[in-house]
Length: 541
Image (cartoon, rainbow, N blue to C red; front, side, top):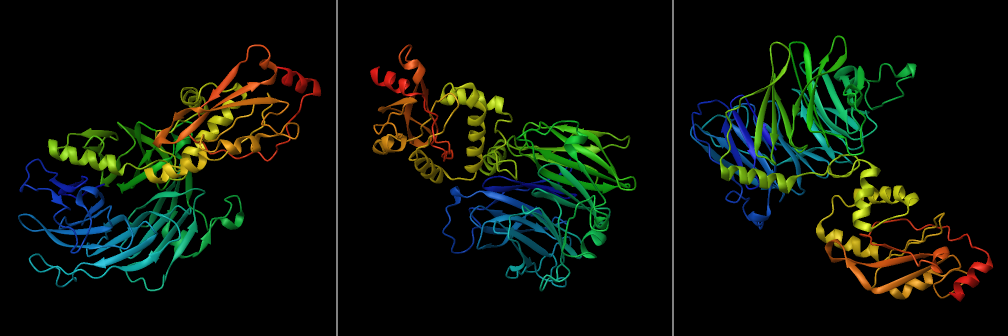
């Protein structure tokens, strides 16, 4: 979402990249870099339907690369007076991340399919200011079977982490047939981020559930290649496991709630210590930890207040930059000499037009957290809170069914996070065309169906005792005309469930309106039947 060097900061808007010097007295005025005027030749994309998704600056601030939602990559070069567009091209799949390696002469592109490509900018001899820039055809160097969540570099290695809980280390940039590849099943959940520290001799990895691990690159990966992490209690695993691991929720002395998962980590090492910033979904604070490698201890160093959990992080030495696109704000925090984390006045100020573009970028690209369970960051954290939604959305439920219904709602939400509106509409239409019967101890049967298919209703509900849609235990009244319009225009029938023991007295009913929550059909249709007297009373009434 943004990139920072020693002299410049670049942030993503939806339609433009906005560049600003990070000194108080800018030497030049840097205008926005628009994608609409720099689309690849022959592109049929509609500019107002695109959005930038990622960018990176080379270490010397000479080049900038960015990617949009239409699979297009753009390269710009900084001349003594302005930024010039060098070239644009289109990838086969949508890009997840673009970045420069440490030399600045290669662009590494990671796509949504798990493939990693590299392209070369000119050559070491010809790549000089003022000379034409040449770009090689992107070449695939790595392939993953799962979604790649992070890619980092050293001088001679490339490291990746995926949603398959693995961390991989490979030689770079001379990758021919994955020579020198080492990998580990390093975590029990998705590895969200990795970071090289201590002059690239150590590696930090963190998973979605909050486990932070400290590794030695050579001993833990390359010397013991193709290792699967063994049980840490095993004597034979000592040479195959990390130096140490911590659970950050334990260090924060807080209990991890349902929606709290790690979504981003950034680390920096200087003066013999390592500082780790960890972004957690649902937290309004950004904790920064201090790791002392010799003692292998980790402690909470400080916290930064956040307006929301959709931010990006980057370290430059002892400076921590936090970019919040939802508020078009870039903040700077500094590790002070007396051992504290302080917010420092930052000269970067966005104009109203830039703010509008940056906020639009945030609205378009806001991800759904957490990484592992695919639950949005605003999801209800506890079943108790979910009950309130159930009460407002679906009406009152019997107390013994509230927990099961709340868990079903959470499960259904997990399945629909990455859907488009069209896919959601189709799914809801499919779900609401199904009918579900579930036995309850209080002999109440819930029915999910649509008014478009009332003819299937009696055949599913029928019991061996009654083939007209009424069992000896309950009577369900369906009013096909009384419907409610749920999300995306999908109609759900209103169900009235009448308890047997209340039919003859108060005629108490229960109306349940559902938003197509996907529930499993109970295979046990063996209802507990009352004695024959109850059936006779029902018929008489």
